[in-house]
Image 1: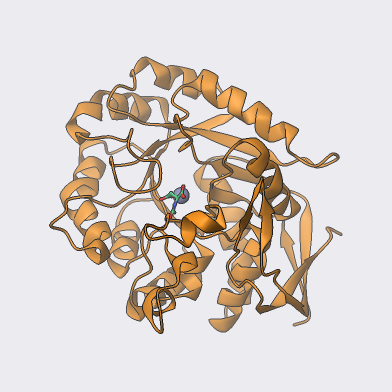
Image 2: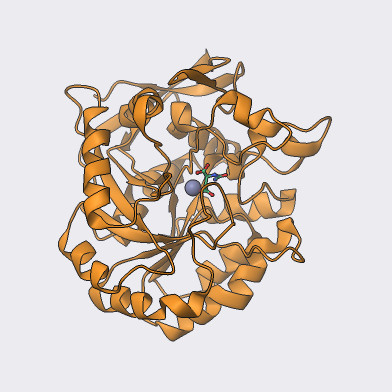
Length: 346
Ligand code: NCD
Ligand code: ZN
């Protein structure tokens, strides 16, 4: 196969940041995706519909002229989110969901939820209004090994929330383990999961073998090969519960290459091409379109995109570094060759 035509895909989990740096990353996403679920973990977090709409207008300003990219906003759930805010979310089509970060689980999660029981009234309102809950599914207890944090979160918290709120639609974001895949697969249709390109392409050796490689450090952290294999199986299975979410999370190079490097891998520069590499390696390119362009839209009850994009088999070299405001950014596969290239929409 030399050319691959796909319905324009969407990115159901993305970090765009803000200010000048955002202007450098937005065009990468816009080039390939029709819509993106934009994460609210700014400093301070996007916690109200009003904040989200102002942030959205800044994103639209950074959108290259003549493009139709649509940012779908999310609110950051805190211990003090008022249940009343959920009605405003339900009434605002540009705000699609709320994001649950357990406090301390990842980048800019300090304002996250400390006591899950405390947010039950908000979850009840979300269930009633049909607003999806997006979950960073990791516990933060210091006695739980970082490689086990997803499984323990599911066992201790997520399974209970899913049972207590049987109509609540939940996305287990950036699922990274066989256990996570199993949980989603065994749950009803209201529970889905996003999968990143980097978790489909790499296991934890990329991070730790032959030296510490901070550009592969993200959360949830890369896992062992058997987990990567389970993710690839889920992504290529055709099961509509699994869909594309890059979790592309840019950080300045110096903050990654540091004694305490930030978590986040940058993949927006070549996201659909990276997924194509992963699907091709699994012999499942024919499953890419549904995963990238149908399942997420269906889960969010939004229309599928109508335009198309075309990928062509041709080798190209990913830049060594990219501009990022007044800093620079090291993308995944920096300086390496990719085998699929997005050519303009037909
Ligand atoms: C994300 C970020 O940098 O905002 N980092 C990451 O490693 N994925 C936060 C997140 O989604 O966990
Ligand atoms: Zn993320």
